[in-house]
Length: 253
Image (cartoon, rainbow, N blue to C red):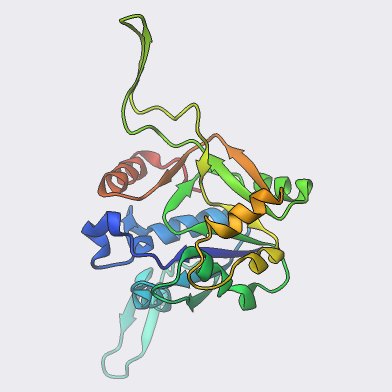
């Protein structure tokens, strides 16, 4: 299936990095967040990517245009200009980079992808969240229920330690546990093409009118992912993901 990744936002809460580069290009373990997300999809044989660009689009384009050179040793013959590559680290991915407007909202960016996706179901996620999600199981879930949209529902880690109290006595303590209640939108959607008709234009937020309309029509289903999921919203998130990568990232494939 074709994969849309939203990579055009400003990432203002991560301004320590995003004043210079777009958030999906912030590196974890020396590789952009975008690369980590794509590796997850490719692991399940979804390798046809459509990247919705906006803020600092040229930096993402440069990364993929120079991907082979950035990931290989090579020799340059300065007299002839010939380049010989050695030990090329390549991916068998097809990557389409689409400018979707600097000011477009998430829904508008998806709408601009319609001509590339055509009349077929597709996968969609945000360019700032990683997970150890089973995409084969997710797609099967979507096909089985027959509705228009599947969203992956996740329960993120709490920002603070959790205390369970018995009167004034602490009966258990967990440092930043996974929340037990309150599922949230974790991205990793599976969507049928008629969803495009619910998006009016560039100013439409994916998470507002289109998904609200689908919900009211009974066409939005949730795939419950109980495993690892984390969004890189802040510098603290980035530092956490970096530390997890060093220890053996749960999302790595």
